[in-house]
Image: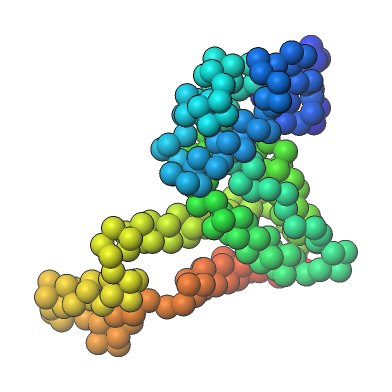
Length: 251
């Protein structure tokens, strides 16, 4: 990462440290306290109790240190959230291969990103407040752009495709997490919830005012959910179909 003329990047100190551009404090407030340990403790809190449980004071308590001691490493909670999100992504998969087709590469990229977020569903609750600026997020960006290298598309179009695909992935993971939370609260299975919703629609709608909804009800499409991956497969394929329409004339 290029630095500014004055030697800095303009990034918070903790983010520069994640890039290896800053040394850790020479004398920490407590032996063994490091930025990775702080991030790891915050991630474990989010995994156990949800993102709302993460606060500087709670993380400090988990580590057995004072809250003020954390500020030697992370100056604000927003920085900690960025580093937690970067930890949730982890490094991208290796590749793409030299001869790998762009669609195969982008499909693999999307599935790998989905897997990382499913393992850490709290990460999709973090508001996006900045373009990629942490090590793993930039590595994912590099990998995705590399998948599109032979498409003949301009760099701006490639970036727009990454934004489209990653936004779709995040939305699908967040929707699945919302539905799982709702199922836990209600005590019903997804199949039971879908069936109850369909029966409710039958009571609320009629063929004259809602002919399209009625047709879906009569076809049975609203009574049972598909497989856990069905909607993701359908949506991703349609997005990549659209990209292919851009790529083909330039082939």
